[in-house]
Image (cartoon, rainbow, N blue to C red; front, side, top):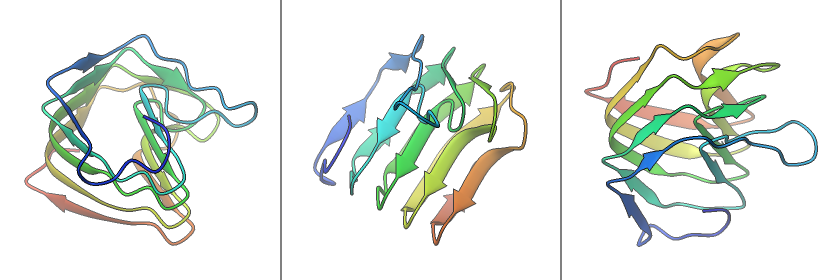
Length: 125
């Protein structure tokens, strides 16, 4: 997934592993990188064993607002800005029934920046 996926786009029932986020600068989204108003539904996923400078598991950037549901995020590695999941520059997302645990991060499990918002429901962080 990359850019402008609509809310009718569904990624469901996969394990996302072995990814390395590198966008030529500050890498983001080792497992899933969303950019430029990508708004998919991410459901019933396991996201583990990914690496990036920021947003090791998921990087949602520049207005990307995924709905993340029934997902386990663990064992991802992050450096520099150090988030497991990062929402940046106007990303307005929702997480429901999500567990984020045991990631190798520097700052926090979830990072919000530049006007991004996150609604969290029935989740463990």
